[in-house]
Length: 208
Ligand code: GAR
Image (cartoon, rainbow, N blue to C red):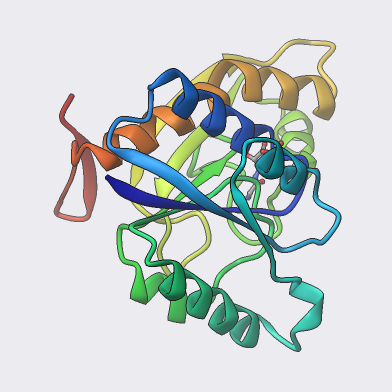
């Protein structure tokens, strides 16, 4: 059974999707044992508590820079003996001290079709605003491994939705969450826990 630690910063709807999937038995061979939040007032912490999962607050603003913060996260992941780290709406870019210690063991969900609308500065509603400003007709979400570069690790799963004429960043975000993120993140986590994702020449291949 793989030990899953989820990192959050906000509302935690993706965390909720993971909790619900685990309850349904859809996370095969994995268990969420701890939720770490970069914000003390994140609603995601309440979701963890309601599900009986330990919550830890490591506030980003309590550390002088990304490296010091990442070292604190790394110490906590090591203490928890994490087999898989899931970034579910975690709004801080982790320093390479974490990504190098957990190669192909950190998964992120990004609310766009990578390589579009991704990288530093693209998070949350900003991603959807950029997609609407560009005028793309399809957007979606990507579940990928995390490496030293923001949103550049091997892609595990992607799903697309249509962009509608009257979309706002909020309506597009909601459609992408409902249709893609809340389904594909639990699916990718289960595939990882079942050892069904293989890395071949830096590319992730799923063997279902
Ligand atoms: C989600 O749409 C997630 O993909 C995005 O923030 C939202 C968090 O919602 N993540 C990023 O932008 C990371 N670059 P949630 O807290 O309700 O899961």
